[in-house]
Length: 198
Picture 1: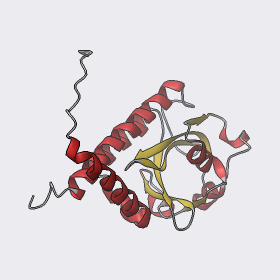
Picture 2: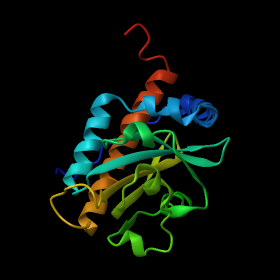
Picture 3: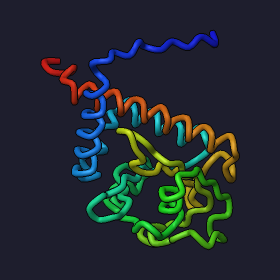
Picture 4: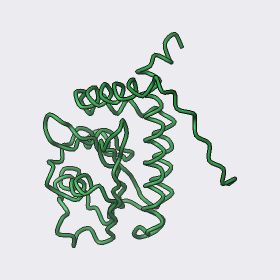
């Protein structure tokens, strides 16, 4: 690390345009269904995320995006063998740990999830499995909080170690931050037409 920070010189004529771009993207994201928004994460981004799930000792992970119209968090990506059953599952805001993370905008880690009063086992029952440990971190892009990324250990799945550590939470938070930057770059390039004709 060099310790040198470089800032692009702001162009005064673009300040008003930047506010318009933010409003445009915010409106587009809020009016686009979560099932389509997951397309903002390309295969390299999803690969990075799946690697992170394994690095922290999880057996699978899920991307949840907020549906503005329904008021639910919707599972739009899952890296596990039950992905087909999980994708499309709606978690009502106000129920469960995923919702708590979204509302409080704070990472969460629990290594005895069954004992947690906030745990909603509806999804566990849907796939006939039992979550034993979970990390969940807020997921931001497009100038705002858009969802949650979660990673779990399941009783029925084999994994290298039991439970998650504080370092694992930091790792997943860093990857969520990196994905935010990648998605934003894609959004800005698309909105400004940089990818036209490519």
